[in-house]
Image 1 (cartoon, helix red, strand yellow):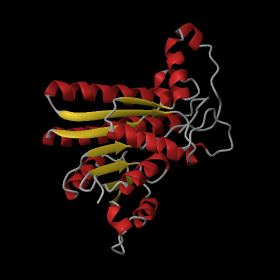
Image 2: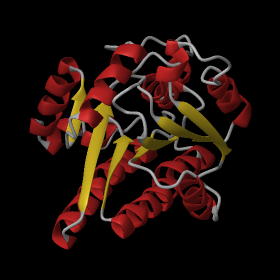
Image 3: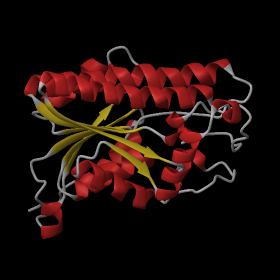
Image 4: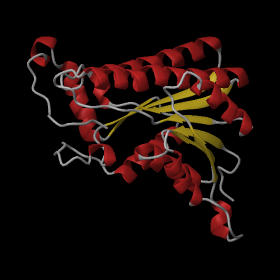
Amino acid sequence: MSKFSGHKAIVVGASSGMGREVARLLLNDGWTVGLVARRGTLLESLAEEYTVEDHSSDKKSMGHAIVREMDITSDNADVSLRQLIDEMGGIDLYFHAAGVGWQNHVLEKQKELRTVAVNGLGFARMLGEAYRYFASVGHGQIAVISSIAGTKGLGPAPAYSASKAFENVYLQALEQQAKTRGLDIHFTDIRPGFVRTALIDDGTHYPMVLDPLKVARKIVAAIYAQKHVVVIDWRWRMLTFLWRLMPNWIWRRFALFEADRLS
């Protein structure tokens, strides 16, 4: 039996990309995982991989998946999240991987508003409910995939970089509040660079692209270690360090990469 048997998590954004990869690793480790996303069919296909149909030792070591179709931009998504938590008999980990982003060189209205709706309002709605649940029981862990894009304002993707900065600061603020209130809630802010997922599979060349499975393993290791902020990998840590040192008068003139979409 896995040492994580009895542990429960909800992964929001589990239908694809890094959310799906992390959910799979948690399930492999024996967690019971609530899979949440807008695309229920993709969640079902993942859950089917963990349907126990025999009593082999391999099956016994795997976790159990629970599927819940949910749109975090819906006004009642937080209510649905709490209902799922209650149905699962509580959770130990809330993992947020849902997000969207595009480069938007001409500031198209719908791209900007959609990004803010998902990465800003939807993010706060779901994390707020997860935080309130953990506050009610006194302990838990919230982990988030944000982005290195929150380091500086990126001209090619204004709403995306701004929303990721919002996520970074919001998580930091919750961590401070939890500490002040004496709550045993741990927070992990995971900031990857470009990861080879469907979101950047558009024929464009992206710099320093990361392998999704390797990134997922680093994410799970960071969660288990209860790290606070993790930038993946060392190349992106060096780059973002240099970005922070760059004066604004230089940054304003700095030419960034060009592509159609961000992960």
